[in-house]
Image: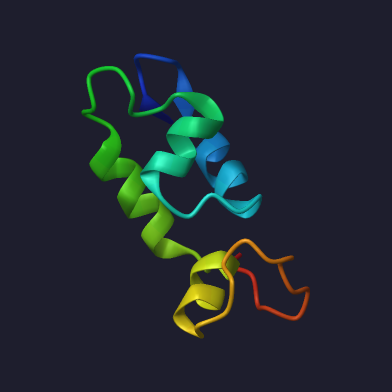
Length: 78
């Protein structure tokens, strides 16, 4: 299913970028431009990102550097 019709970005593509460490709509936009034209998909991107674990966000919540290497022992969303 398309999330961003302006750039033809699918939900699976957004999820792949999230799996690679993008935790915010802005980081998704940097990775694939989704949300940078009309902006109507930003809420959908937020909803997708809100469903999964984000190792970088978890590091920040723990007071650790968010740009540090992502630990391999952090459970990943299925």
